[in-house]
Length: 327
Image 1 (cartoon, rainbow, N blue to C red):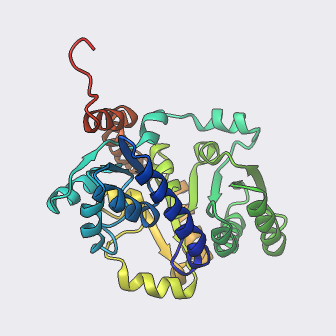
Image 2 (cartoon, rainbow, N blue to C red):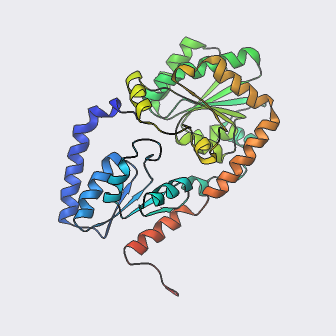
Image 3 (cartoon, helix red, strand yellow):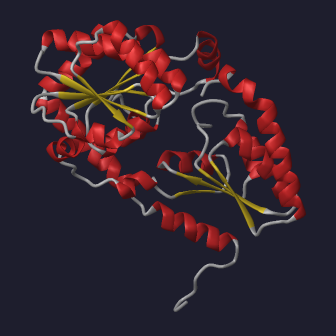
């Protein structure tokens, strides 16, 4: 979400957290489970843990990538960290923080091989030629910053291959309104199908995907679709992030593979030629797509661990309610 962007919500969030702390200290639960939102949950978890309440945090913050000093706070706040990715568990164990890799729930839900033609039929897309999914983000700020870049890149591609069409899933009406305004300004004749939501279906239907950094890159990997990633932040947030981030990659596929599988374009590196050229390369080079698909399938299998069962088992063990033989 950025740093500057969240400041305006800070007073309200602090008030909510104080109310929750008072509530749970007055009526202690068997265990408190914080789901993601580390800047909100970790302080609350620390207060509760200090009061003798068991605490578990599900979905690790990206502490391995930036602000590693937070590990000390995490160690003081949680009795166990449940991680979605195997490299996160290794990171915590090296820091002597109790952690368990449970896998990613999406890896359990998404099938190994989804037919793009069936996905197109489900979406009512009749086009048989190359189809590119554009996912400029699920937040309004992301769409405002990336819609123009993505549409200019799409226009660049269409000028070179007029058999190419595009599909754009949009998270809500506000995002759709902004995108439609940018589309009218950039190229209102571009062959684009706009969807309300249905991001997974759009990616499944596509030959290649242009998308913002975030969970969508993981979904795209699990769907075995080749992709190019781009991202913009507000200038101030970006300058601050450059000082804090300590990772060679931004996209989850590259982090999971520990190699640059997916081309990443950040801030000033974004251009129609850069994004469009990579999309054309992915569509016109089947051998490259096959290679990516093979690596994506291996990662999918590693992340498919029956995450919800492992998470539930961990909670039961921590609360002394673990099943015994025959029970």
